[in-house]
Length: 441
Image (cartoon, rainbow, N blue to C red; front, side, top):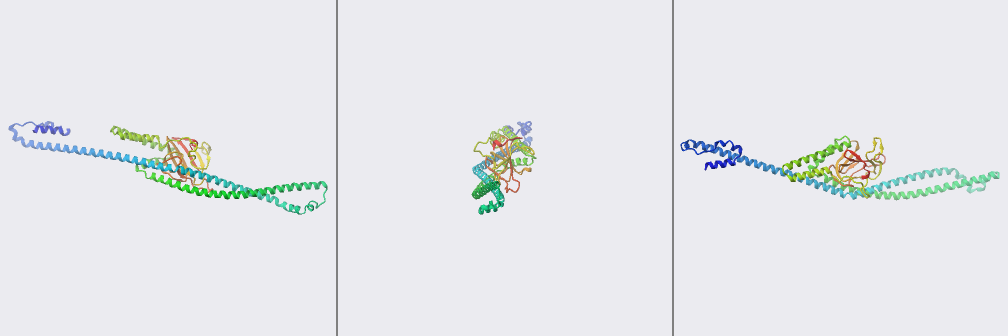
């Protein structure tokens, strides 16, 4: 019975303990030595039992630790998946809120354009008024010396014409001169009358246009308040994103802030994305080696999504599309000669506090002050296309935020006409190269 128990113990104990005991294979003692070996054999059996119990305890502790580590790993993976799912929900919420502002922002931009056009019309009417008044004053000044002669001629025509006896030919010449003078005076009088009539019409039209302007300004402020509230709601949704998303966003933003130029900023952002993509690929390979198939597939899907970008890229604008990012006129076109060489983008001169709209759907990589560009935004359109908008007054988006084409991203600075007019610089880049943005606006 003792031999059988020992064999079973050897089979169940760890090899590290079983090996040293191989040389102590028990045998049936002879009767003559039974009394002498009974005590040592009992002590040896107790030692073996303790070693077996310790080995079993160590094995149980090892299994418990492995189980705990497995549970912790599952908890971390679940937390990561939950964070990613929450990030997707946050992004979808921000995108939904952004999309809800597109129509209202388009209406606001049309109102801003109408207001700018009406303001130009009113300015033109004032200019015409000033010109007419100046011409009227000159004509009145030119006629003033002739008025006494005209008045005397109208009262005493015979005495005026025949005050001094003249030869017949000279008298006829004098009459012809007087006739021409009267014709000229009549023409000037008619011009003065016409200009005064036009001034009256201008006064009436200006009063109407100013009334229309007051209506447009009230409508514009109402629409602007509504759009700003919606943009603020989208911004707040972005700020509530989880820590994992904020960490990735912060890496991209920090890389851009360290850049010395817009081109350097784009290069640094793409380097951060390439590093993140490589890390995801390594994580997928490690998951595959550990036979965690679902985790590997999910990680590879994130890597593919990162490589594709957060948006659909850019497409040629169709009729009825979002149009220019701001109302106003283009002051510098793509490729136009400037002091620093051919223009690498398009520069707009928008009205005061004009709303700036997103030129594509995608994710905000950077939003804030940058070097001499003022408030600048880098919008990742996907497919390695990025729009750069510089010169914004008040930013309405945050880094990492998902927005749709035509959604509000900020406002231009206020402008009264007494200082330099604010401008919006719009540049489109694909990787390290600039692209003419005009076909996509």
